[in-house]
Structure formats: structure tokens, C-alpha cells
Length: 213
Image (cartoon, rainbow, N blue to C red; front, side, top):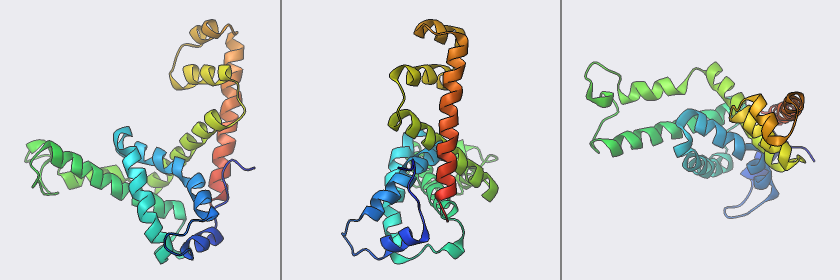
């Protein structure tokens, strides 16, 4: 079975044609394809503290978007449309955070931090958005982050290899210390990292290639 199911115009059409309240394997496939990347992108744009809430908000709105036919392929690749939705949710979450920390009536053109010569809330949100090219690059980073989680959690790796990879590649521990901790040679630690990263890149490429939108 593929690491990431195919997302296609046909899949979007199946979701669009579902009756309200009707469940379908199409939704399962959609969720499997995009949930991890949506969360990784939300965390990249808005921080880990808001990522889970943003995922639920975006997926909830996608129900209406896909069923109502608001998205069509002539609007561009689906991941670009989705990335814009996520950024909008990040903006709203950011503004809510600012409002909670300050006066509840704060307008979006108010200065951040009370500095009349500084950036406004709107300026801050616009800076977070990035250009279309930056959004595309960030989406690919999110896909790779999702692919890494998939490989580490859902593929046939030994617990030792997972722990070695996390310690060396993700937590930045010194290769000598990692080798000593797990009773391995430095070369073995390096090989484990390389082997797992090849799987991650392959899974990420598969997801990007199979978006089809």
C-alpha cells in the first residue's frame, strides 16, 4: 500500500457528492493524505501551541468547501488553496492571542505592543503569510515533516533505529554520545540516519507527486 493515498479530481468529486452526514472512504483517504501536512504547516506558520486547533478548524471548513464546490482545479493546485486556508486560520488564531493579551476591542490596525511607530497587527499577520513561492516552499517542508512522522511511526523500523534517529537527527545529540548510548559505531549511527532520511524523502516525494491537483 502507498504511504500516501492518491488525491485526485475524482476523489474531490466523490466528497462533493456525499449527502450531509454521509460518511465515505473518500473522506478517510482525504484525511490520511492531508492531516499530517496540514498540522505541520499550521505549526510552521502559527506555532505548535495553535496547530491542533487550526487543523480542526481547517478540516471543518473543508467539509463545506469541498461539498459546495468552492474549490475547482482551475483555481490552482489544491495544496496552494489549502495553504491559503491554513494561513487565514493562523491569522485569526494570532489575532485572538493578541486580543486575549490586550484590550478585547483592539483593532487590526492597532500597533503591536503599544508602539505607535511600530508594526500593526495587520503588518504582523501579512509578514507571516509569505509570497506564493514561500507558501509553496513551506508546504513542501510541511509535507516532509509529515512524511518523517509517518516513517518513524508507521513503517517497519526497530525501536533502536527510531531512538537513534531521534537523538542524532532531531535532538541534535553528538554522534559520539549517540554511538556510546546505543553501543554502536559512529559509522552505524550515520548509516541509520541516512537510511531513514532516504525513506522520508521518498515518502514526501510520493505525497507531492500524488496530489494530482
